[in-house]
Image (tube, rainbow, N blue to C red; front, side):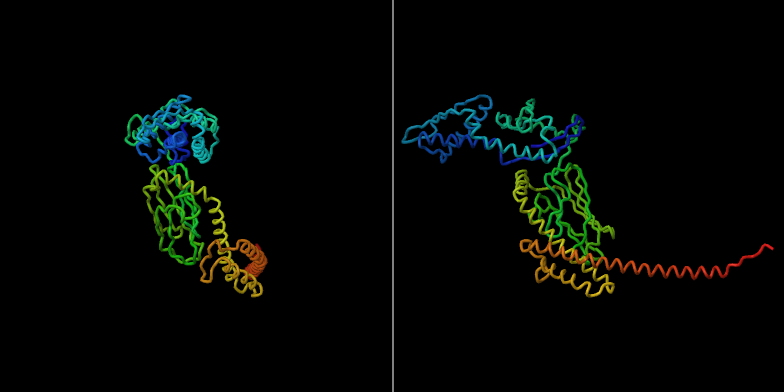
Length: 446
């Protein structure tokens, strides 16, 4: 299912795409087949499911019945000589009403509405904003499907295009655009990204750069930094998927930006840019804004995943959304605690003799305790499942409270130092003024 923005101009913009490629006309056929098998076994005691020839005939009959029920209230299914028992032929002759068919397939019809709702949501629209609904595929002829669409959107589907030919017409149009056919040379189809694109950041988190269903071409830049002191290089791990962590997403490519000059962590400014052209080719670059050094990678195809796999990835992300969100919150808490330990120690070290040991000993003890909460004995980050969130948050609060008093003392020391330097400058100016005054001589005009 796709939502397009067509404003009368040659430009056609895809606003959102969704679907369930595990659902189709065959599923409706299978439901009818299961009903036929059950009814035949009930009346004759014979199970036809193991008879390959009988199953082939049942499939053909089920599809025919489905098609006929789109135009009539009841259909007759007659399959003479469907099997043999004790040397005698058995015949299948049943009547299937549309009402029974709709009861059997109600779950399948509801499944077609899930991607409809998802696409409307992804497009940032309300159902009432949709102007026209075009049916694609033979199974959209089923009255129950059309009724469900009308109920969901409030609009009756447009029936001016043969659903069986809609895909072929669209493919022919796109082929004409690619071939430069004069009749469609001014038509432009703006596609969207099928899945979210991002990079891996501290803690194995996927940081989003371009959201799923973003219209292409598009470009976005964001600035990142280093995670350790004197880090000589950074790795850019390009990912695709809807999960919160890199390990659960698809790797599109990796590259390194090397030659970073020694600097405290957090100081280098690394600008990462994602640029997707109209053909879906992704260019990812990383540039050190301090030195101008740059590295990049080009990804010809955003994904090697099939349509089925893309839909599965989206469904998987929805299934694990809450668990991923909870785990990500713990990773971010661990990262925050680590940053507080690093930055606070640096502040205390830079203060030097401006602070007495009595002023800093308590804070340093708190920092040691917080560090032990987020790192193991070898200094490696603890697994997020081993973190005590409440204790970490409480310790962070204690450190922040203690630093308020230290910050006040550092401010007072800086103010006193500035006042002393200001007094010395004033004294130098006064001396200079005295000299000038002494040398200055007023001469009488007489």
